Image 1 (spheres, helix red, strand yellow):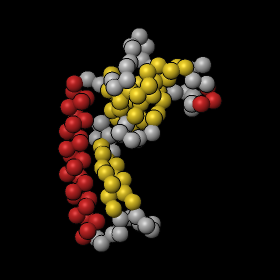
Image 2 (spheres, rainbow, N blue to C red):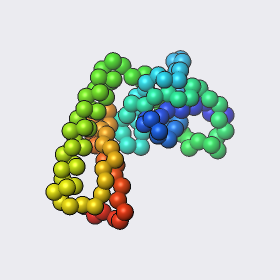
Image 3 (tube, rainbow, N blue to C red):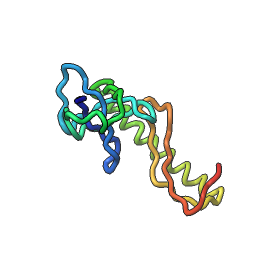
Length: 127
């Protein structure tokens, strides 16, 4: 049975499982840096080390890169501020282009290699 750590990226987000860091005990609420499908991100530990059935997770598990440092947390806070600016810019562009869509949120990956805009629309939106 593999041992996993449950990490969540958004308050109501889906739980994703990662391989634990060797010789490091992680508790619920600890902030960690991981390589997710979207890139390098900070997440919160929601489930400490759990033993799960191999068929319940996709193997091999990606490892947790590290416990988030003070620098990581500061960068994350800066990214959130920049995401607010990007969201405002995007809202103005949506209005100017008269797109029938509603912007839900915006976020940067920790290393700022990606900015992700989430939106809803009744119909398909082609960019």
